Length: 458
Image (cartoon, rainbow, N blue to C red; front, side, top):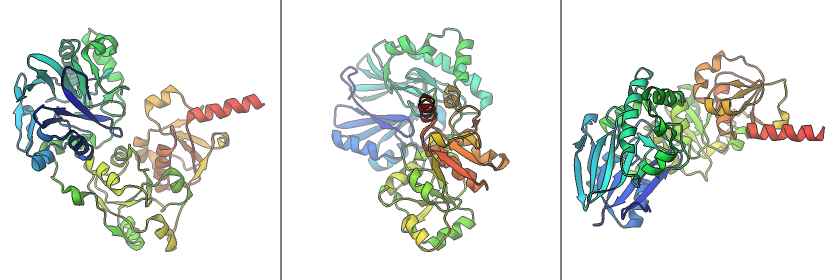
């Protein structure tokens, strides 16, 4: 719970997407939810634990990294949706704009226009009487930085960065003890760059946020734009999906997957379906369906599913029996991937048991890397710049599919920080016809340690 004023607030964090939504106890048995995702399971648990009913739901902006759960909450709970009137949403909501105030019953919510991350972006100032308790800053001011401004296209990035400069200066004028509750945080590709903490105060940000210390607008813009890395292409689609309003789901059936026999999976693969293997890296390395795509089920599953699988391709899932199918499906639905046509019945063992062809990918340790193999580093640009193996070739995982057929087919060790992204990259290369692939079990730190130990022995 937050200690800001007397407001009872719970942050519900999605570690995989790096986002937070917030549950505010309005003091009369009802609640306000800010920036909920389509996957409402954690929100429902928090609401149930607090014994509240949801009366209001507010979105700070048209999200690009996840589908909003606002429409679902309006349908299921009768919640009133609060959102920017400038967003021109297609569904029923209460449109608000600069200076509009919503009485929540004791507490109130005031809309502040804070464009930059998006055109119609609002922050919401939560007030207890006349006193500011905190501000929901969405994708404007985030802990230690500001959210990126290039999601509406690179041609508008500078214009929106200038708007972000004005928005941050406006927010920084709030009282120093005002809590800062951003949506984007560590792990979010909307952050620029991501910070570590998820909440803060205006006073703390004035002391520690380097962007707030830049008084010259041109220098601010230069600094912000220089920090921007790549982001998943589905970000360009979800804002419009959120404007139209995601389809209402039946949670009781949404997370079920039809069971598909091996023969059906083989036929779907030939017809253009993508087989996504969600098993852990060692299992995929030992044996997998040739041409399948390795995306291990973990917190970041949705990000890489949306990044690596073509947006129109049907998806067939392979998983281990102990992996939670509901978690897998909800992560996909959270980013608008509703093309999961089923899963391999009986898992990979059933595939292998029918005599269907299999493939494997060798896992190697740092000591096994030598000058005879190309080293392909698929981490993000900033990670590579911070330190990499000598002579390593750098291609970000998100960009690899577009260039895989142009890379020479030669013996290659693929690496990332720990292994999951590297195995995904190796599976992409295999799909593109590459041979003699291996994946480093570990990352550059493991290689550096092994190199030091070798030198000490010598």
